[in-house]
Image 1 (cartoon, rainbow, N blue to C red):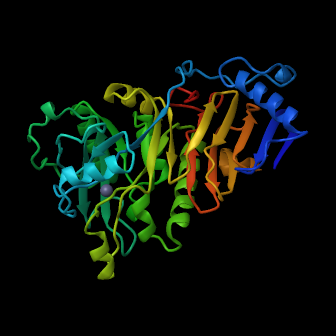
Image 2: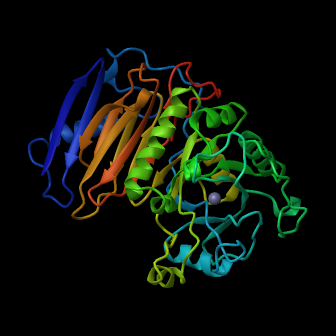
Image 3: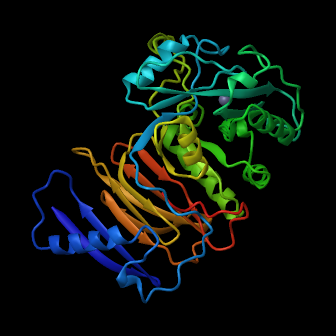
Length: 403
Ligand SMILES: [Zn+2]
């Protein structure tokens, strides 16, 4: 069965379509569905739908025009191999795992080492590294029971610029939290790569103020949904993800546009079952990834990620994602027996609009500060779109709009 509602919320027009997957062809309301969809089809690029003519002027955005529609690529950007001190799976076996799980690209991010091996056919290897500084002592100091673990990934690094030639990268110890991150970010760039601040909530390494300052200095990417964090938070995965969302909101509220990333941070593969048998937690793969709208080439993926043309997933796939400074439109690739809820969130984490169903649109009014969307399935999987920053609040100089 399909139910379609058209509603006015505030000064903006909202449409929503609720559909149960696998139901019979729509009757009656179908005409509304198709006209609603036709309006959406014309909406997301730059031209607003005719029905929006009476809406207030859309928010200003300096974002470039959206790229031509491309299929999404499934990618993993944080995973460890036997070349990390705390993992034991050979790099080729790690890549074979991700190839078997339908990934288009993988970045191997060993601790302080660049690992390059030939990937299986059809899988792109993105050279990467996880800069890792672990200590008990730092400034400001950690809360009792926590340590100073400052990790940042370098993605798309150039192995030819690695003066340690794949060996252990020697890092000068930085006592200051910000100094440690700054060194890592600088080093990612010196290797020709792009920096991602990793798992800021792990040992509460970085708070929103620190990340906002680093974003002001050019940091674009923060790993928010690290699948391995669920073993470290009371309440498990959901609590960890909710906490990460609140951190993201806080950064965006400071006017800094950063793109959130979802990753496995996997360390265990064939050895996972044995670890569990011994009561130890296993950080396994294919639990959190990004879906990037780009051609399947490293340079194209890099550009798309830096422009925010991707969404995060822990199991929800989007069939359609149109995101601009004027509106959002999402359609979930619905799975049989699954139900979906979609919410749109703005400044201070305010719930702007909520839909029970696999499809939703939201027309941006312009006063929301920023807008992003979250999809949750009845089995607890989620997808997060990147935010659109509105008006003058984006102090990084771009609105991040357009998919
Ligand atoms: Zn790490």
